[in-house]
Amino acid sequence: MYKDILVHIPTERPMRSVIEGSISLGAHLNAHLDAVAVGYVATSTAYVMEGGAAVAAVFELERERAVERAEAALAVFSSEAANAGISYACHALGAIPADAAGSLGEMARLHDLSIVLQPDPTQGSFDNDVPGEILFQAGGPVLFLPYTFRGAFKANRIGICWDGSRLAARAVRDAATFLARAAEIVIITINESDTVSGEASATSLAKHLG
Image (cartoon, rainbow, N blue to C red; front, side, top):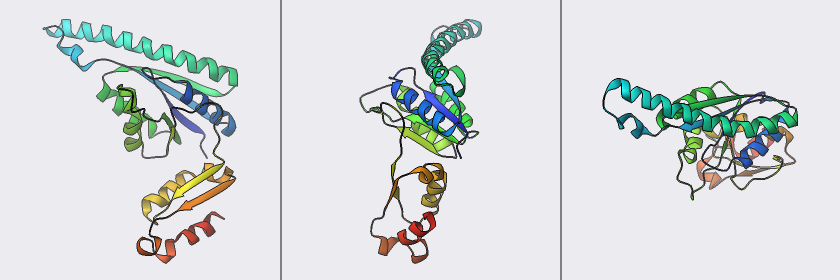
């Protein structure tokens, strides 16, 4: 059961999709949402001026401005979450991209599920790279919401890509909350007779899910 969910709110990309999707899912599951937004400090900031104290002052000023950008994004989420009557908290970060990725990964490890916005190939922001960073650092399930998503989240028809492996089994277990609520589940295999043993066949998986 997903009771504690991390939501990444972009600061440099449209955020409506992930806000609507995460809040509707949180309300449906009666879960607590921890929303986190990152205002990015340019890595070149540390080279603006010579001298340790001067550099530190410039960096701190940029970090404060970055936090303000994160807080502005979270204000939108907070308004919507309050209107929905769900349990939530907001966390604003100001950091260079590398540090932000590490912090988000650590936060994700202490949540049942992380929700991120699908990367948009037309965007050139670090917010476009964050979903992948969280995916590989979380150690748990990550839900990618399409950047074209609108409205309430629904997972009525779910597809499982199955090859009988440990990773596939882990994914099925991580998605148990969604699978239990689905109206239809489709199991997809490729060259099953050559790649999947009989004990871990798609037929066996179907029986297990049943």
